[in-house]
Image 1 (cartoon, rainbow, N blue to C red):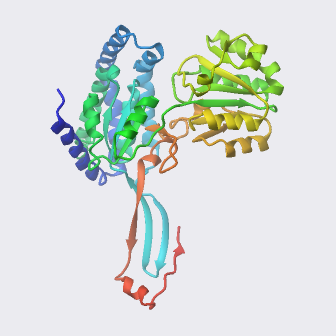
Image 2 (image 1 turned 135 degrees about the vertical axis):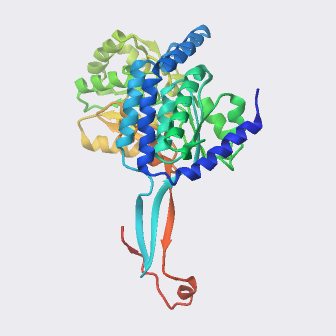
Image 3 (image 1 turned 180 degrees about the vertical axis):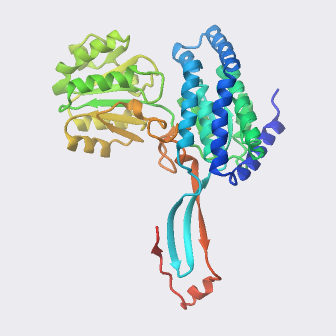
Amino acid sequence: MFDMDAVERSAREAKAASYRLQSLSQVVRNEALQEIASALMQGADAIFKANEKDLADAEKAGLAKPMIKRLRYDRKKMEETVESLRSLVAQEDPIGKVVSRTEMDEGLVLERVTCPIGVIGVIFESRPEALVQISALCIKSGNAVILKGGSEAIHTNEALAKVIAKTISEVDERFEGAVQLLSTREEINALLSMDQYVDLIIPRGSNQLVSFIKSHTKIPVLGHSDGICHTYVDEKADLEMAMRVCYDAKVQYPAVCNAMETLLVHESVALAFLPAMADLYNRAGVELRGDEGCRSIVEMKEATEKDWSAEYNDLVLSIKIVSSMEEAIEHINRYGSHHTDAIITSDEKSARHFMDEVDSASVMWNCSTRFADGYRYGLGAEVGISTNKTHARGPVGLEGLTIYKYRLSGSGHVVADYAGGERKFTHRKLL
Protein backbone atom coordinates (compact mmCIF):
# COMPACT_ATOMS: atom_id res chain seq x y z
CA MET A 1 0.00 0.00 0.00
CA PHE A 2 1.32 3.43 -1.00
CA ASP A 3 2.50 5.60 1.90
CA MET A 4 3.31 9.22 0.99
CA ASP A 5 4.79 9.87 4.45
CA ALA A 6 7.18 6.93 4.07
CA VAL A 7 8.47 8.27 0.73
CA GLU A 8 9.02 11.72 2.20
CA ARG A 9 10.78 10.16 5.17
CA SER A 10 13.13 8.29 2.81
CA ALA A 11 13.85 11.48 0.88
CA ARG A 12 14.48 13.40 4.09
CA GLU A 13 16.84 10.69 5.35
CA ALA A 14 18.71 10.71 2.04
CA LYS A 15 19.11 14.48 2.29
CA ALA A 16 20.51 14.21 5.81
CA ALA A 17 22.87 11.44 4.67
CA SER A 18 24.10 13.58 1.77
CA TYR A 19 25.39 16.18 4.23
CA ARG A 20 27.17 13.53 6.32
CA LEU A 21 28.76 11.94 3.27
CA GLN A 22 30.66 15.13 2.52
CA SER A 23 32.79 14.52 5.63
CA LEU A 24 33.73 10.95 4.67
CA SER A 25 37.32 10.50 3.48
CA GLN A 26 38.17 8.69 0.28
CA VAL A 27 39.64 5.89 2.42
CA VAL A 28 36.25 5.26 4.07
CA ARG A 29 34.35 5.47 0.78
CA ASN A 30 36.77 3.04 -0.87
CA GLU A 31 36.52 0.67 2.09
CA ALA A 32 32.75 0.65 1.65
CA LEU A 33 33.15 -0.34 -2.02
CA GLN A 34 35.58 -3.13 -1.16
CA GLU A 35 33.22 -4.47 1.49
CA ILE A 36 30.27 -4.38 -0.95
CA ALA A 37 32.31 -6.51 -3.40
CA SER A 38 33.02 -9.07 -0.66
CA ALA A 39 29.44 -9.07 0.64
CA LEU A 40 28.00 -9.64 -2.84
CA MET A 41 30.19 -12.69 -3.36
CA GLN A 42 29.28 -14.04 0.09
CA GLY A 43 25.57 -13.51 -0.55
CA ALA A 44 25.64 -14.66 -4.16
CA ASP A 45 23.39 -17.70 -3.72
CA ALA A 46 20.54 -15.67 -2.19
CA ILE A 47 20.87 -13.05 -4.94
CA PHE A 48 20.82 -15.68 -7.69
CA LYS A 49 17.77 -17.29 -6.12
CA ALA A 50 15.96 -13.95 -6.13
CA ASN A 51 16.93 -13.46 -9.77
CA GLU A 52 15.63 -16.89 -10.73
CA LYS A 53 12.24 -15.88 -9.34
CA ASP A 54 12.27 -12.68 -11.39
CA LEU A 55 13.24 -14.62 -14.52
CA ALA A 56 10.48 -17.16 -13.98
CA ASP A 57 7.90 -14.39 -13.47
CA ALA A 58 9.17 -12.57 -16.58
CA GLU A 59 8.85 -15.67 -18.76
CA LYS A 60 5.32 -16.31 -17.46
CA ALA A 61 4.43 -12.70 -18.26
CA GLY A 62 5.78 -13.07 -21.81
CA LEU A 63 8.55 -10.51 -21.45
CA ALA A 64 10.54 -10.05 -24.69
CA LYS A 65 13.75 -12.06 -25.02
CA PRO A 66 16.06 -8.99 -25.08
CA MET A 67 14.48 -7.82 -21.81
CA ILE A 68 14.90 -11.26 -20.22
CA LYS A 69 18.55 -11.25 -21.30
CA ARG A 70 19.03 -7.90 -19.57
CA LEU A 71 17.25 -9.18 -16.48
CA ARG A 72 19.49 -12.21 -15.96
CA TYR A 73 22.00 -11.82 -13.11
CA ASP A 74 24.23 -14.87 -13.01
CA ARG A 75 27.74 -15.77 -11.86
CA LYS A 76 29.33 -14.03 -14.86
CA LYS A 77 27.39 -10.81 -14.20
CA MET A 78 28.33 -11.02 -10.53
CA GLU A 79 32.03 -11.33 -11.37
CA GLU A 80 31.78 -8.38 -13.76
CA THR A 81 30.05 -6.36 -11.04
CA VAL A 82 32.75 -7.11 -8.50
CA GLU A 83 35.49 -6.28 -11.00
CA SER A 84 33.73 -2.97 -11.72
CA LEU A 85 33.64 -2.17 -7.99
CA ARG A 86 37.35 -2.87 -7.60
CA SER A 87 38.12 -0.78 -10.65
CA LEU A 88 36.15 2.07 -9.13
CA VAL A 89 38.21 1.88 -5.94
CA ALA A 90 41.33 2.51 -8.05
CA GLN A 91 39.84 5.69 -9.54
CA GLU A 92 41.09 9.00 -8.16
CA ASP A 93 38.89 10.86 -5.70
CA PRO A 94 36.45 13.08 -7.62
CA ILE A 95 35.72 15.19 -4.52
CA GLY A 96 37.81 18.11 -3.29
CA LYS A 97 39.74 18.59 -6.53
CA VAL A 98 40.82 22.22 -7.06
CA VAL A 99 39.70 22.92 -10.64
CA SER A 100 40.96 26.51 -10.71
CA ARG A 101 42.70 28.98 -8.41
CA THR A 102 42.73 32.75 -8.91
CA GLU A 103 44.41 35.49 -6.91
CA MET A 104 41.80 38.24 -6.81
CA ASP A 105 44.24 40.44 -4.91
CA GLU A 106 47.20 39.92 -2.65
CA GLY A 107 46.03 37.59 0.14
CA LEU A 108 42.60 37.08 -1.45
CA VAL A 109 42.47 33.73 -3.25
CA LEU A 110 39.47 32.13 -4.98
CA GLU A 111 39.30 28.39 -5.62
CA ARG A 112 36.74 26.34 -7.53
CA VAL A 113 36.52 22.92 -5.89
CA THR A 114 34.56 19.79 -6.85
CA CYS A 115 31.87 18.57 -4.43
CA PRO A 116 28.97 16.06 -4.47
CA ILE A 117 25.65 17.01 -6.05
CA GLY A 118 23.68 15.78 -3.02
CA VAL A 119 20.70 13.45 -3.43
CA ILE A 120 20.29 11.67 -6.75
CA GLY A 121 17.17 9.77 -7.77
CA VAL A 122 17.82 7.09 -10.39
CA ILE A 123 15.06 5.25 -12.24
CA PHE A 124 16.25 2.30 -14.31
CA GLU A 125 14.80 -0.74 -16.06
CA SER A 126 15.65 -4.45 -16.30
CA ARG A 127 19.38 -4.70 -15.56
CA PRO A 128 20.01 -5.54 -11.87
CA GLU A 129 23.75 -4.89 -12.17
CA ALA A 130 22.86 -1.24 -12.83
CA LEU A 131 21.71 -0.98 -9.20
CA VAL A 132 25.17 -1.92 -7.95
CA GLN A 133 26.97 0.31 -10.46
CA ILE A 134 24.83 3.32 -9.63
CA SER A 135 25.09 2.82 -5.88
CA ALA A 136 28.86 2.42 -6.10
CA LEU A 137 29.33 5.54 -8.20
CA CYS A 138 27.23 7.56 -5.77
CA ILE A 139 29.16 6.23 -2.77
CA LYS A 140 32.51 7.02 -4.41
CA SER A 141 31.35 10.54 -5.34
CA GLY A 142 29.83 11.26 -1.91
CA ASN A 143 26.20 11.36 -3.07
CA ALA A 144 23.13 9.79 -1.49
CA VAL A 145 20.97 7.84 -3.93
CA ILE A 146 17.32 6.78 -4.09
CA LEU A 147 16.83 3.94 -6.57
CA LYS A 148 13.79 2.66 -8.44
CA GLY A 149 14.26 -0.39 -10.62
CA GLY A 150 11.81 -2.03 -12.98
CA SER A 151 9.10 -4.19 -11.43
CA GLU A 152 10.37 -7.16 -13.46
CA ALA A 153 13.58 -7.18 -11.33
CA ILE A 154 12.00 -6.43 -7.97
CA HIS A 155 13.31 -9.47 -6.08
CA THR A 156 16.87 -9.17 -7.43
CA ASN A 157 16.96 -5.43 -6.76
CA GLU A 158 15.71 -5.87 -3.20
CA ALA A 159 18.36 -8.52 -2.51
CA LEU A 160 21.14 -6.35 -3.93
CA ALA A 161 20.00 -3.14 -2.20
CA LYS A 162 19.74 -4.94 1.14
CA VAL A 163 23.33 -6.17 0.89
CA ILE A 164 24.64 -2.72 -0.09
CA ALA A 165 22.74 -0.73 2.57
CA LYS A 166 23.67 -3.16 5.37
CA THR A 167 27.32 -3.35 4.32
CA ILE A 168 28.02 0.38 4.08
CA SER A 169 26.27 1.12 7.38
CA GLU A 170 28.53 -1.44 9.06
CA VAL A 171 31.59 0.29 7.56
CA ASP A 172 30.54 3.71 8.91
CA GLU A 173 27.25 4.77 10.49
CA ARG A 174 27.35 8.02 8.52
CA PHE A 175 26.30 5.95 5.48
CA GLU A 176 22.90 5.29 7.08
CA GLY A 177 20.19 6.28 4.58
CA ALA A 178 22.68 6.88 1.76
CA VAL A 179 21.35 4.06 -0.46
CA GLN A 180 17.61 3.45 -0.57
CA LEU A 181 15.26 1.53 -2.85
CA LEU A 182 11.71 2.42 -3.85
CA SER A 183 9.44 -0.35 -5.12
CA THR A 184 6.38 1.14 -6.83
CA ARG A 185 5.49 3.62 -9.53
CA GLU A 186 3.36 5.56 -7.02
CA GLU A 187 6.43 6.03 -4.81
CA ILE A 188 8.57 7.38 -7.62
CA ASN A 189 5.76 9.71 -8.74
CA ALA A 190 5.69 11.07 -5.19
CA LEU A 191 9.47 11.48 -5.16
CA LEU A 192 9.32 13.55 -8.35
CA SER A 193 7.45 16.25 -6.41
CA MET A 194 10.10 16.47 -3.65
CA ASP A 195 12.52 18.96 -5.17
CA GLN A 196 13.32 20.23 -1.67
CA TYR A 197 15.13 16.93 -1.00
CA VAL A 198 16.24 15.57 -4.38
CA ASP A 199 18.88 17.44 -6.41
CA LEU A 200 18.98 15.42 -9.64
CA ILE A 201 16.93 12.72 -11.38
CA ILE A 202 18.59 10.27 -13.78
CA PRO A 203 16.17 8.08 -15.77
CA ARG A 204 17.63 5.05 -17.56
CA GLY A 205 15.15 3.39 -19.87
CA SER A 206 12.71 3.89 -22.69
CA ASN A 207 11.82 7.11 -24.45
CA GLN A 208 8.41 6.97 -22.75
CA LEU A 209 10.02 6.74 -19.31
CA VAL A 210 12.37 9.69 -19.87
CA SER A 211 9.62 11.84 -21.40
CA PHE A 212 7.32 11.07 -18.47
CA ILE A 213 9.97 11.98 -15.90
CA LYS A 214 10.83 15.25 -17.62
CA SER A 215 7.20 16.34 -17.78
CA HIS A 216 6.37 15.44 -14.15
CA THR A 217 9.09 17.06 -12.07
CA LYS A 218 10.78 20.36 -11.27
CA ILE A 219 13.95 18.47 -10.37
CA PRO A 220 16.74 18.72 -12.98
CA VAL A 221 16.77 15.61 -15.20
CA LEU A 222 19.93 14.13 -16.72
CA GLY A 223 19.61 11.39 -19.30
CA HIS A 224 18.76 10.31 -22.80
CA SER A 225 15.60 8.98 -24.31
CA ASP A 226 16.62 6.78 -27.26
CA GLY A 227 19.87 5.15 -28.30
CA ILE A 228 19.64 5.44 -32.07
CA CYS A 229 23.30 4.98 -33.04
CA HIS A 230 24.77 4.99 -36.55
CA THR A 231 27.89 3.81 -38.32
CA TYR A 232 28.80 5.44 -41.63
CA VAL A 233 31.06 3.49 -44.00
CA ASP A 234 32.83 6.16 -46.04
CA GLU A 235 34.01 5.89 -49.65
CA LYS A 236 37.60 5.72 -48.33
CA ALA A 237 36.91 3.04 -45.73
CA ASP A 238 39.03 -0.07 -45.26
CA LEU A 239 36.20 -2.49 -45.99
CA GLU A 240 37.69 -5.39 -44.02
CA MET A 241 37.93 -3.10 -41.00
CA ALA A 242 34.43 -1.80 -41.66
CA MET A 243 32.96 -5.31 -41.60
CA ARG A 244 34.65 -6.12 -38.29
CA VAL A 245 33.56 -2.87 -36.63
CA CYS A 246 30.01 -2.92 -38.00
CA TYR A 247 29.55 -6.53 -36.92
CA ASP A 248 30.64 -5.71 -33.37
CA ALA A 249 28.47 -2.57 -33.20
CA LYS A 250 25.32 -4.58 -33.96
CA VAL A 251 25.93 -8.16 -32.86
CA GLN A 252 28.22 -8.05 -29.80
CA TYR A 253 25.30 -7.04 -27.54
CA PRO A 254 22.26 -5.66 -29.40
CA ALA A 255 20.01 -5.03 -26.37
CA VAL A 256 21.78 -1.85 -25.22
CA CYS A 257 21.60 1.84 -26.04
CA ASN A 258 25.06 2.05 -27.65
CA ALA A 259 24.43 -0.73 -30.19
CA MET A 260 24.20 0.41 -33.82
CA GLU A 261 20.64 0.64 -35.16
CA THR A 262 21.30 2.14 -38.62
CA LEU A 263 24.17 1.48 -41.02
CA LEU A 264 24.92 4.13 -43.65
CA VAL A 265 27.06 3.13 -46.66
CA HIS A 266 28.59 5.37 -49.32
CA GLU A 267 27.28 4.45 -52.77
CA SER A 268 30.79 3.99 -54.22
CA VAL A 269 31.57 1.06 -51.87
CA ALA A 270 28.07 -0.39 -51.44
CA LEU A 271 28.44 -3.07 -54.13
CA ALA A 272 31.75 -4.30 -52.72
CA PHE A 273 30.75 -4.01 -49.05
CA LEU A 274 27.10 -4.94 -48.62
CA PRO A 275 27.00 -8.57 -49.88
CA ALA A 276 29.84 -9.69 -47.58
CA MET A 277 28.53 -7.63 -44.66
CA ALA A 278 25.00 -8.96 -45.15
CA ASP A 279 26.32 -12.53 -45.18
CA LEU A 280 27.99 -11.98 -41.79
CA TYR A 281 24.82 -10.47 -40.38
CA ASN A 282 22.61 -13.24 -41.78
CA ARG A 283 24.79 -15.89 -40.14
CA ALA A 284 24.39 -14.05 -36.83
CA GLY A 285 20.60 -13.98 -37.21
CA VAL A 286 20.32 -10.23 -37.87
CA GLU A 287 17.16 -9.12 -39.67
CA LEU A 288 18.13 -6.52 -42.31
CA ARG A 289 15.87 -3.71 -43.51
CA GLY A 290 17.14 -1.60 -46.39
CA ASP A 291 16.28 1.22 -48.75
CA GLU A 292 15.74 0.60 -52.46
CA GLY A 293 19.46 0.81 -53.26
CA CYS A 294 20.35 -1.79 -50.65
CA ARG A 295 17.61 -4.14 -51.82
CA SER A 296 18.91 -3.96 -55.39
CA ILE A 297 22.23 -5.38 -54.15
CA VAL A 298 21.19 -7.74 -51.33
CA GLU A 299 17.88 -9.42 -50.56
CA MET A 300 16.39 -7.91 -47.38
CA LYS A 301 13.19 -6.42 -46.02
CA GLU A 302 12.10 -2.91 -47.01
CA ALA A 303 13.01 -0.14 -44.58
CA THR A 304 10.18 2.30 -43.86
CA GLU A 305 10.41 5.88 -42.63
CA LYS A 306 9.82 4.59 -39.08
CA ASP A 307 12.93 2.41 -39.26
CA TRP A 308 15.26 5.41 -39.51
CA SER A 309 14.21 6.55 -36.03
CA ALA A 310 13.78 3.09 -34.48
CA GLU A 311 15.69 1.78 -31.48
CA TYR A 312 15.40 -1.99 -31.94
CA ASN A 313 17.49 -3.23 -28.99
CA ASP A 314 17.52 -6.50 -30.90
CA LEU A 315 19.13 -8.24 -33.87
CA VAL A 316 17.47 -5.91 -36.36
CA LEU A 317 19.35 -3.34 -38.48
CA SER A 318 18.26 -0.71 -40.97
CA ILE A 319 20.66 0.10 -43.84
CA LYS A 320 20.76 3.09 -46.19
CA ILE A 321 23.01 3.98 -49.11
CA VAL A 322 24.09 7.65 -49.20
CA SER A 323 25.74 9.64 -51.97
CA SER A 324 28.07 11.66 -49.74
CA MET A 325 29.34 12.13 -46.21
CA GLU A 326 27.22 15.29 -45.99
CA GLU A 327 24.11 13.19 -46.64
CA ALA A 328 25.21 10.77 -43.92
CA ILE A 329 25.73 13.61 -41.44
CA GLU A 330 22.36 15.15 -42.31
CA HIS A 331 20.64 11.77 -41.82
CA ILE A 332 22.30 11.22 -38.44
CA ASN A 333 21.50 14.68 -37.11
CA ARG A 334 17.90 14.35 -38.31
CA TYR A 335 17.04 10.81 -37.21
CA GLY A 336 19.61 10.08 -34.50
CA SER A 337 19.23 10.55 -30.76
CA HIS A 338 22.55 12.41 -30.30
CA HIS A 339 23.92 9.41 -28.42
CA THR A 340 26.81 7.73 -30.30
CA ASP A 341 27.74 7.72 -33.99
CA ALA A 342 30.79 6.45 -35.88
CA ILE A 343 32.59 6.83 -39.20
CA ILE A 344 34.80 4.23 -40.86
CA THR A 345 37.34 5.89 -43.15
CA SER A 346 41.08 6.04 -43.87
CA ASP A 347 40.81 9.79 -44.55
CA GLU A 348 41.64 11.78 -41.41
CA LYS A 349 40.22 15.02 -42.83
CA SER A 350 36.86 13.34 -43.49
CA ALA A 351 36.88 11.77 -40.03
CA ARG A 352 37.54 15.10 -38.33
CA HIS A 353 34.79 16.76 -40.37
CA PHE A 354 32.34 14.01 -39.43
CA MET A 355 33.21 14.23 -35.74
CA ASP A 356 32.85 18.04 -35.80
CA GLU A 357 29.52 18.08 -37.64
CA VAL A 358 27.68 15.15 -36.02
CA ASP A 359 25.87 16.55 -32.97
CA SER A 360 26.21 13.56 -30.63
CA ALA A 361 27.54 12.98 -27.14
CA SER A 362 30.09 10.47 -28.47
CA VAL A 363 31.53 10.46 -32.00
CA MET A 364 33.93 7.75 -33.14
CA TRP A 365 36.42 7.06 -35.91
CA ASN A 366 37.22 3.50 -37.00
CA CYS A 367 35.81 1.86 -33.88
CA SER A 368 32.57 0.36 -32.61
CA THR A 369 29.78 2.42 -31.04
CA ARG A 370 29.78 -0.17 -28.25
CA PHE A 371 32.78 1.64 -26.72
CA ALA A 372 30.44 4.42 -25.51
CA ASP A 373 30.40 3.20 -21.95
CA GLY A 374 31.57 4.65 -18.66
CA TYR A 375 33.62 1.60 -17.69
CA ARG A 376 35.32 1.42 -21.09
CA TYR A 377 35.98 5.16 -21.04
CA GLY A 378 37.77 4.71 -17.73
CA LEU A 379 35.10 6.60 -15.81
CA GLY A 380 34.61 3.79 -13.29
CA ALA A 381 31.33 2.46 -14.77
CA GLU A 382 28.45 4.85 -15.40
CA VAL A 383 25.28 6.01 -13.78
CA GLY A 384 23.75 6.66 -17.19
CA ILE A 385 24.38 8.28 -20.56
CA SER A 386 23.38 11.87 -21.12
CA THR A 387 22.59 13.63 -24.38
CA ASN A 388 22.10 16.89 -22.47
CA LYS A 389 24.19 19.95 -23.25
CA THR A 390 24.41 21.11 -19.66
CA HIS A 391 26.47 19.84 -16.71
CA ALA A 392 27.35 16.38 -18.07
CA ARG A 393 27.26 14.75 -21.51
CA GLY A 394 27.97 11.23 -22.76
CA PRO A 395 28.64 8.39 -20.30
CA VAL A 396 28.17 9.89 -16.84
CA GLY A 397 30.69 8.51 -14.37
CA LEU A 398 32.26 10.01 -11.28
CA GLU A 399 32.97 13.42 -12.77
CA GLY A 400 29.37 13.78 -13.94
CA LEU A 401 28.16 13.16 -10.37
CA THR A 402 30.02 16.16 -9.03
CA ILE A 403 29.36 19.85 -9.11
CA TYR A 404 31.57 22.57 -7.67
CA LYS A 405 31.65 25.26 -5.06
CA TYR A 406 33.73 28.43 -4.80
CA ARG A 407 36.02 28.91 -1.80
CA LEU A 408 37.33 32.41 -1.17
CA SER A 409 40.06 32.96 1.43
CA GLY A 410 41.14 36.41 2.56
CA SER A 411 42.61 38.26 5.52
CA GLY A 412 40.06 40.89 6.43
CA HIS A 413 39.37 42.02 2.86
CA VAL A 414 36.23 44.16 2.38
CA VAL A 415 34.42 45.21 -0.81
CA ALA A 416 34.37 48.87 0.24
CA ASP A 417 38.11 49.16 -0.44
CA TYR A 418 37.56 48.12 -4.06
CA ALA A 419 34.33 50.05 -4.59
CA GLY A 420 36.08 53.18 -3.39
CA GLY A 421 39.02 52.62 -5.70
CA GLU A 422 41.66 52.23 -2.97
CA ARG A 423 42.50 48.72 -4.13
CA LYS A 424 42.43 47.00 -7.52
CA PHE A 425 41.73 43.38 -8.39
CA THR A 426 44.66 41.50 -9.89
CA HIS A 427 42.71 38.43 -11.10
CA ARG A 428 45.97 36.51 -11.53
CA LYS A 429 45.53 32.88 -12.54
CA LEU A 430 47.34 30.54 -10.16
CA LEU A 431 45.90 27.29 -11.55
